Length: 207
Image (cartoon, rainbow, N blue to C red; front, side, top):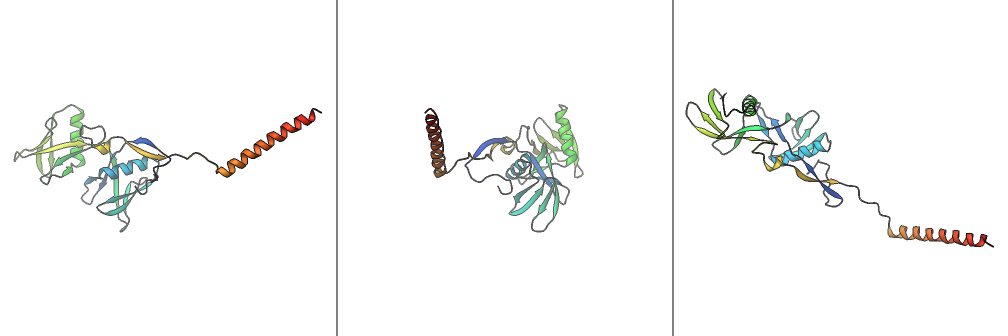
């Protein structure tokens, strides 16, 4: 995990739990897209360690994330995109079996409905009216009747993925200080000589 500041070596490390958060990047169409679980964990570890920058790899391209300005920087083109951390995200499953994030407005509608204990809500998306059933977790097109599965992902949600749970991360621990055996032997000999001299001097002072 390059750029995380973690040791590659398995020695002198101890496990510590770090909670992964859901991180997103904003594309040209103003749509926020989730990073995958590995990158979310890498970014969360970097934040936990107090780092200001971390490297991620998306679709074979290398990016740097500036955790102060909350920007993703393409290391080849220099192009910058906003990034953010969110508590959760609502998604709908499309025909290609891909889960796609709802827009921010629909996310707020669904989260508010769930928080207030509602089982149904409605939203207009792309000029179409939908009913959102929070019991069956379905989106229903009110014109065609077509149903699609919906879900909420992120830490603390029922559909939290493995990446949202705490995982042990190995953190560097300073190794114990060990002197070379030659130095230890020399030191022991010096101490014995000192004690011997002190004892001899005390015995001579008796006479």
